[in-house]
Amino acid sequence: MLLAEYREETGRYFRIKIFATDVDNTAIEKASNGKYPESVIADIPPKLLSKYFIRREDYFQISQKIREMVVFAQHNLIKDPPFTNIHFLSCRNVLIYLQPVMQKKILELFNFSLVKDGLLLLGTSESIGEMVEYFDTVSQRSKLFRSKGKQRSVGFVNASTNMMNYSPYPASLQRAGNAYPQDDRVLERFIKALSDEVLPFTLIVNEHMEISHIFGESKDYLTYPSGKLVRNITKLVKKDLSIPIATGIQKALKGKGEIVLSNIRLRDKDTARTFRLQFKPLPGRKSQETLVAILIREKTEPVSSIEMESQTYDLNQDAKQRILDLEQELQFTRENLQATVEELETSNEELQATNEELLASNEELQSTNEELQSVNEELYTVNAEHQGKIVELTLLNNDLDNLFNSTNIATLFLDENLDIRRFTPKLQAIFHILESDLGRPFFHLTHSIKSVEILKIVRDVNNSHTSFEQEIQLTNDYWYLMRVIPYAVSIKQKRGSHSHFYRHQPVKTRTNRNPKKRTGRNHTPC
Image (cartoon, rainbow, N blue to C red):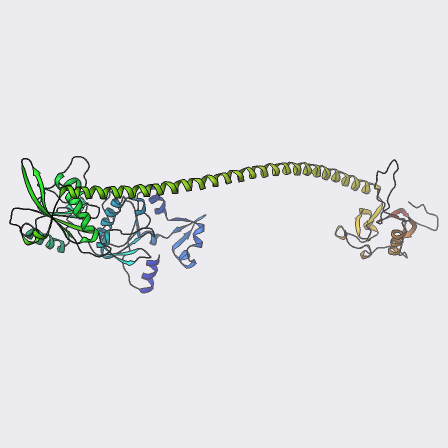
């Protein structure tokens, strides 16, 4: 999307082709669908979301013009041939799962895949390691590197030849016509022309005593054991040369400069040959691999001034020194191992203490869980009791409603503050009252009673706790018998063997309607 935006903003049209590969075919199939969940809204700006995504039922799908830029394919970095002419290669957090040898092989393939000055992006925990001759660092923090172009890599050589015959590139690529760079060809031809005349038999090894290059005929010096191919020089050279070469390499690597060992005898069947070994560290940058060149000359010519100044090799002395070095390394390894064991024991004790704390915490949590279970049971019991009470109150309330409705008497209930608590439907013929008036003050109500101060009567009854009774007439000329009665609440208290009743302040107002209009003074009140 960013490349498409850049191409649109600059007006420069260039072809975009992105190869997206993975060793897992299921992951490739899922990625090629281009479907994203709704949570992608939080990661993509609204402008790009509306421009390059299509809203489906419960997901977003990438537009076809972006999908056509990407080629999805299953690809194994280790086995499959690499892609070529790539300008930018991103391989993040893959190399950390591979061994160093395999990492080096893959980085060589990456260098082959990239064009000159192509960019390589690795993960934050990854690096190019020993491949500094292949890449320049653009940003160490971002792990961004630039390819120097296709180069020959350090590799093994064929022992039956006089020069290097090793390629870091797959055989399939060589058959396809991919050749080495022209510079390497010229250098190879030059070294091949001069090696037999100028150089004796020469080996180039690294600090791990692994052979990287061989110059000259090797059959008189190297033996190849059966089994898995090894690169360690001490296991490949003749037995009599193993200790001198190991000793010379160690001295050269310790910063002693060029080392020369002379009078080294090699028993070959019934004859003995004398050799002179020269160990020369090769110059290089800090980031490059440390290399040592070993020049082996057989003493057939007169002794030169250089040989006069060289060391006469004493096998016994060097063997003792080698044994001493190995013993020191062994002692150092033992001390490191002992320190590691002690650290592991300390860590184990800390883990045991942590485990005990976790067990104690678990027991406390179990105890708390049991207490919560007990409280939960009590709450369940109380809840069941409350449910029973609610059912009883509901039934009682229904009974009261049916009783009030069946009496056919207009009744109004007030609390101690003279606020409306309840009324029967018949009361609506006398007072202008609705269900929404519950809880309102009594004096807010209007009525159709003539010449009676209802509020004063109610207050007097509420204060005096005595009943009041009076005939009243409505505006429609109907007569009623009005009774105002204090609302009594009976509370039975157990004190010995006797009981008493408490009279509460709320009052109850009830009026009985005469079914006929009153004529004269002869009437029958209800």
